[in-house]
Length: 449
Image 1 (cartoon, rainbow, N blue to C red):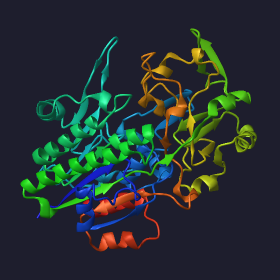
Image 2 (image 1 turned 45 degrees about the vertical axis):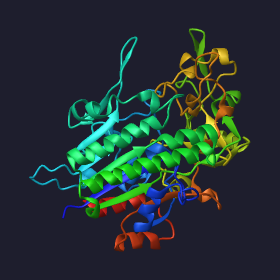
Image 3 (image 1 turned 120 degrees about the vertical axis):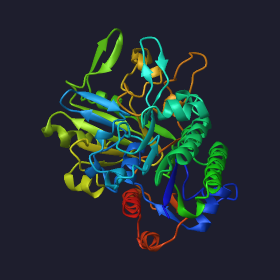
Image 4 (image 1 turned 135 degrees about the horizontal axis):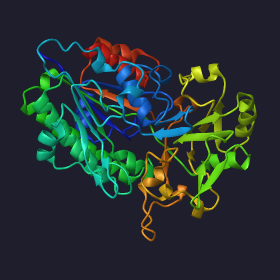
């Protein structure tokens, strides 16, 4: 009998909130098989963790050191680039023996860095930006799977529900529908799908808010619908269901304008263009590419690295600065793309990308949803200033963040892995002192290739 695996990646599900009577479908999966805590790889951010879950490798091997990268040769920061080639290690579909039958073997919906991936089925948002407009579109593999199969059944995917001030559970509802249709029409042996909406509530309202609890219930209902669809196809007994999460959240009470502080010390330089201030990456002695609670600091002159580290060590709100190769290797983040220094905020703080002193000098993209031009992750894009009809420049609005290594916190909620199957491989994982995202990736590869 052909085996199937469906992995639900539910952002915001944690060891502290998953065991609840209000989540009967998730409990059904747990009671049928097994569950255990998971330590995410560092940094505990979306692209990095997802790469480890699909490769079984750590960032120092797969190269996804955050949600963004800095190109030292052309002085440019790129955030949320989607191309599959950015992942420098084989993923689960690269190990599969597809054989001569042509049967669909793998499917991945809405995971990062899957554009042009070799998975048999891929669906990922890829809007086409015109001069004064945008065509909402999803890249899909096989070609036209989105246009010919998903869109007629589910309607057009709405990017505004996926990110920005109007992001909501509607994005997950569409993705869950696409998961059901994909499984029924393509019959993959492995299917990875992404449920993002709890992430929005956690950052807007805090990890223990009623909004998070309500959104977890919505995720549970959608998981239940997918399970029922599998039952109707008479494939329930041959299907393993996995529910997992990428990282736990930390409620925050403040933020650190790290680039502004580097500017105070004379390291970061700006150029005024058209009445706005932009970072001058070429002439900056140091700048920070920030991502939630982690910042990769790139120092232009090697002789200044120790000097910049001493400055960072004095900044209130910074918990730890990784500087040596051995320190970075301890967290498996010693990769050429990584910053010369890597700063980690305290548990109740996070890093903004802001560098201006006067909000009037902030570049125009600062008050818009513009995930590619900002040289850092901007959770304030989840909020909307009704008076100005724009994204506010108020970092205090953010209530929760993530990214820190769990090793720094003795008491903390963790990520979670829940499976409907229990066998020797699951028992081996459960016997480990610590299970990481990379360990789960290895489990998927060993079990389904």
